[in-house]
Image 1 (spheres, rainbow, N blue to C red):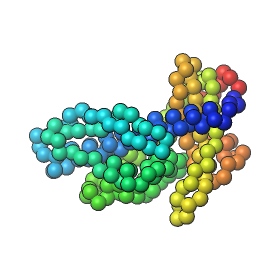
Image 2 (cartoon, rainbow, N blue to C red):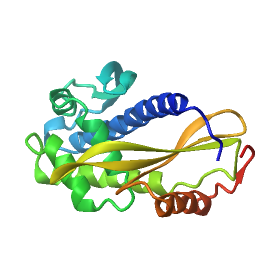
Image 3 (cartoon, rainbow, N blue to C red):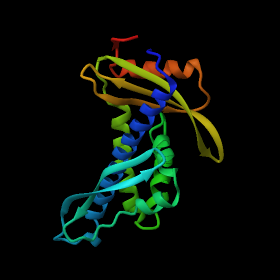
Image 4 (cartoon, rainbow, N blue to C red):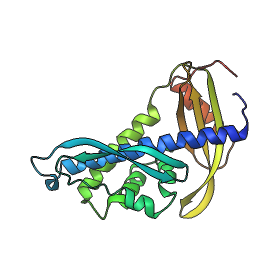
Length: 216
């Protein structure tokens, strides 16, 4: 593992988390319009009509060019931004929790329902949840490249609410491939930082294919 200055890791972490939150906001938006287009409200002759872009301020900085889907009749209105803007910082923590190892269907469903439950039927909320769960599973289990130039490992304590608010470590792995592209390899949330926790992180990365690091 390469040792780098703490402020550099913090900057890398914040930049990549911003990208990560953007990707997953867009995933939820796609699931939302998919559920909308299958509803009676959308209308028989309606269809999707690309997307528009907007910026969204988050605790990790400004997300630029967020792709928000739209329909031809202009009937679709996402319900995502209202709860996001009302509760600063809540969605970033929720996204991290959604992607933690072992998060169950009920936890994801509760998160989705908290955003959309008052606007959509239980069936629609269930359909959105199923789509997001599939994205989570694919992201968690996706194969990694065999070789990386560098893999950065860091632990960041965040306050997560599980009945009470307490600090838990986010195990964070970021890779730079041989072409210089950065990507988040994994998030792992839970408990206090420990050697066993890091051992599980490294095992997961290895099992998914990351088996060679050029700089150590």
